[in-house]
Image 1 (tube, helix red, strand yellow):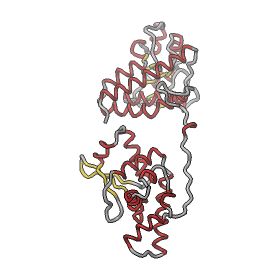
Image 2 (cartoon, rainbow, N blue to C red):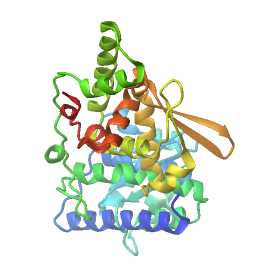
Image 3 (tube, rainbow, N blue to C red):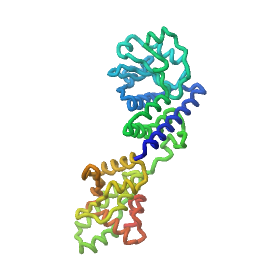
Image 4 (cartoon, rainbow, N blue to C red):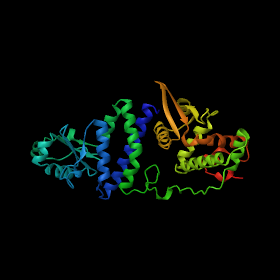
Length: 344
C-alpha cells in the first residue's frame, strides 16, 4: 500500500492539475460544466465531508441556483468553474423559499481557485444565511480537508480520483490529461483476438506419456477443456492476461485436481503495481472463475488458480510444454495467445 505521504501527493497533484486546466478554460470564457462534472463534485464532497448529496438536476432539469442537495444534513451546493462575484450573486439570487425549507446552508464549490474577496450585498447574504468566507470553497479548501482525514479515507479519495479524473478531462473536452494520458480510448482499444481451433496435439502427446493410451472420448474431453480455457483467456484484456501469467509463472506443482496455489502476500511483493490495480485484476480473474481468493486467517490469504485452467489439467500440460522447451514460452500462450505453438 502507498504511504500516506505518497497518497496525498498524488491527490494534491491531480486536483492542482485539474484546477489549472479549468483556469485555462475560464480565461477564454468557457465555464460550462456538464452533468458528469457535477456528479464528480458530488461524489468527492460526499467522500471528504461525509455528506449525502444528490444531483438535484436528476429531479428537475437544470435546478435553478443549485446543483447538489443533502436534505439529511440540510446543505446544498452550486458547482461552477466561474469564480466571479457576479456568478456568486446570481446563484444566491436564485435560491427560492422552497430551497430554504429544504436546506439551512448554501455553499458554492469553485472547481479551481476562488477569488481572494467577493462583493455581495449584506441583504443577499442575510436572505440566504450566506458567509462568503465559509461558504465559498475551492480545491484548496478540499485539499486542506483531505490532509486531515485518516489514512484509510485518504486511500478511498485516492482511488476515486484515479478512476475518475480521466473522465472529467474527457467530458470537459480535453484531448489528454496534463500527464499526457489520452482521454479517448478509441485509438487504444485492444483488438479482439481471433483463433480457430485446429488441435492441441502437443499437449495430448504429453498427456499420453503420463496416462498411457487414451480413448477417443478422453481426447475429446481434453480438446473441449482446452477450448474452454482458450475462450476464457481470449475474453480477458491483455493487461489482465499479463497479470494471470505472472501468477502462473510463480506457481509450483498442481494439486491432485489440477489447481495451483499461491501465497497472496508474496505475490503482492513480487508484483510492483498499485494495491488498487492488483485487487482489480484479482476481481476480474475471480469473475472468470480462473482463481478463487480465500482468507486463511487474519493476515494470510491464498490464491487458487483453477476453474477452466484446471479442467482436464489443461494448464498443467501447458506449463509442462513450456518447461520442456519445444520453442514454447508460457508467455506465448497465456499472454500472446499463440495457441498454434501447441499444434502438431
